[in-house]
Image (cartoon, helix red, strand yellow):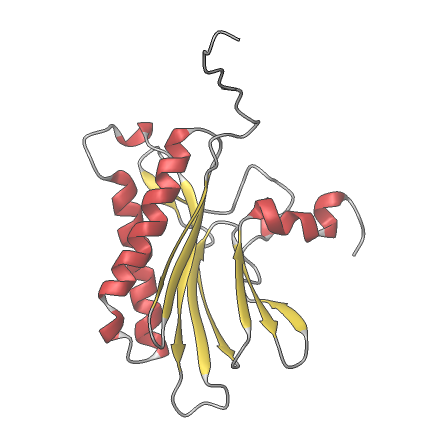
Length: 209
């Protein structure tokens, strides 16, 4: 041995990882986002990182304005706009930036409701959210319809994305959606990209449900 450090520089297929997440926890609220950069490489990774962090940052700055489910939804939509603006920030040519899907939201305590908690989320693209209901042991998809229509069997089409996609300048907001789901104490909300949920979709494996 000559004492030289030998490094394995082999990158696995799909590197760098383009799935990103960001979360901020408070006493009675949690703000979170996941983003899945479209395609491979640093551009989609940077887009996913910028979008998820800016969404959480914007919502965290406006928690005092969450006075109702409607106001929370409006702020979530503005968070998506802020996330897209963050991707487009800088002097780099717009068409030379990456694109990404995004799913984000906030959990809040509800007043005058049978269930004490609520999830308000917004998404563009094919990331999904699920609710595990602890008391009855069932899992329910919150984001029904986020992947449907012409893109249901097309893995290259997430249904929408942030960043310069339409005319290489604007986001693709075809499936931009908002959801509200009441929750119970100890329920679990799971957010995941298609790299996870496709493994549990029989149609993606050519199997009849």
